[in-house]
Image 1 (tube, rainbow, N blue to C red):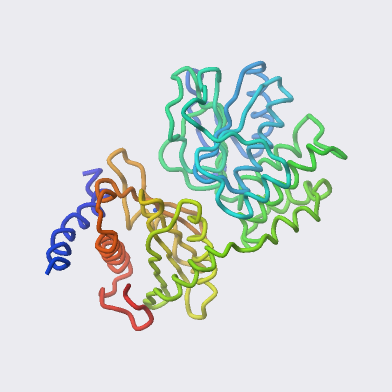
Image 2: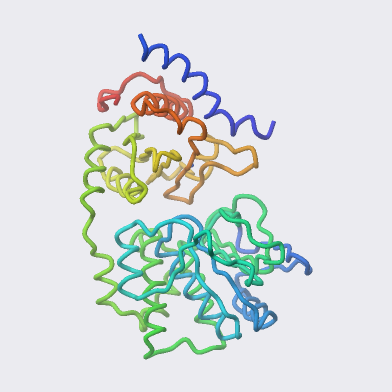
Length: 401
């Protein structure tokens, strides 16, 4: 029964494929109990998290740590990874930061370039065998796209989203009452026995990255909480404000503007919901999907926006943005798309935004892209219509394409 819901997208798509073919032919609380691998379970409380992290890092002094950025690198996970690297180094831990997806968003590329941040992109020749532990920040799950050696244990997991599944690690700190993971690391730095103070180029780099992470994930502090404000107050005196402003004011790429125009042309309005399928999107432009959703949410009378497209001819990528006081993006997307055969949800999110990714699987081999898109759009739209309880007739605002 577990996989029944998770299979509904592929099942509906498979059924529709035949009919369309013939017609064509004629997406935690502050305290988390964290099983500690080979050791005993430890309870991480937000009030003692900084001290617990310091003690753990000291206990593995001299080891090698692989800090992993899951998904596309963004300001929150980049800043958090830098802060963890700084803390680890003060305990004699050698670390490297690795990411598995391309740095695609224009602001994120500017952040890495302007701050001269050293990140390694994973490749087939990357040697993971020399690392004793790995860490993950700003992620709902501890699953990685690569296989690490069995001896490499999860040392640190820090996030501010609802977790997907049971997170097993030596240190787990998940705070859904924080607007960003960068704020949690700001707290670690504030309470660290190692002086995080300037003037120092490294301190300025980390503080600026963390502040950008907080600003980005809280929508310019609109969704900030006390943790975010406290961390920002501490970091503010070390931030390069001119550089932060420069990074935040990066021009919107022409491709993103084109994608927004397509999203507007194909909008489908149902009550306070707006859906828009933008078709096939290049890998390097996938961040434009979320930016389109951000823009469309400003339309009067709209409370929830979902924009989706086929990215890299590999998976359906969608972004949800909402200002509704009653819609929970995390639960909403999980209800719509369910789980895969391994029990992992296709979608998830936090209080004002979410996202989903659905692999195309064998549908990716379809040579008729027009037909494939009709199949995908019809299936996705009907799942949305079923969820909000409306008939799947063409809307007056959309062109149905």
